[in-house]
Image 1 (cartoon, rainbow, N blue to C red):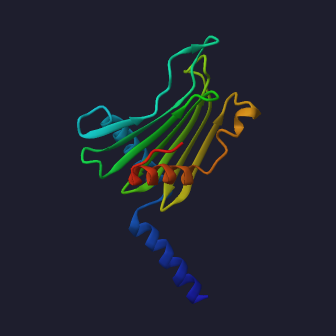
Image 2 (image 1 turned 60 degrees about the horizontal axis):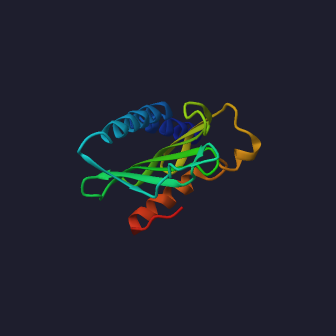
Image 3 (image 1 turned 180 degrees about the vertical axis):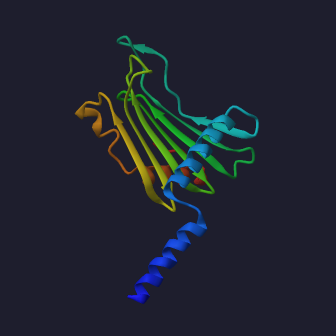
Length: 172
């Protein structure tokens, strides 16, 4: 019994000494995401877009395509954000936020083609040490036929895009 109490007490003290609770980590990640988003409007980071979403009209709708934007340090040695957008079926935007080459946050959004302000689906995942510490899902009006567009391993996808960037080649 004494051994169990010592282990429990040790774990409790260890958690308190580190000061990193899940709520604390999520708050720090939210701050990091806001900071990263605000940095994209300054000269302290570099942004590179690949691919293009064509603006030709076809049957009253815009043409289809994809784009990937990577936000890095000016020297391109640190990746802060990779955003993949395609409008093959609805508007799918995948945003992956990295800190020291570790995925800390991702947001997956599906928006209506006709009304970009109408979000049909939004999922946000917070990560710490490559583990999901919080996942929120808001499914407004996403039809079953589009569910496959959001039903994938977000962490694996984020690291896949990071690896492609580091290897110097874009992929879809």
